[in-house]
Length: 85
Image (cartoon, rainbow, N blue to C red; front, top):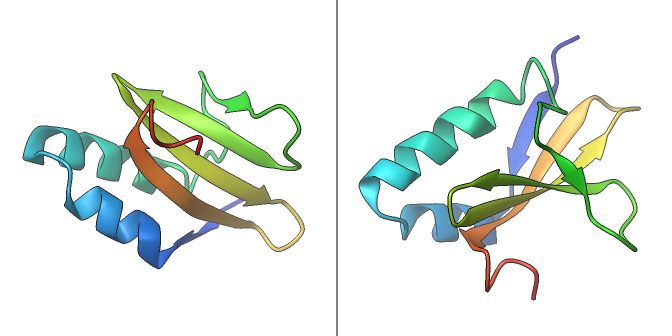
């Protein structure tokens, strides 16, 4: 049950701008989504269809999960005050 990971261009830029320790941790979280797209601690965003968020300290990862095509799309990565805008 392996999922494919797609990272949007905006999310790649946001990830690259993070400090190195946070960058490494978030990359490891993203790579773990291949085997388990809904890990412990994931929350569905209200009013959004199939969009979830993962938390890592003060940072959030907004993801879209498509179970039919077995794909996880990383939409945004950033500080909690900015990621929901």
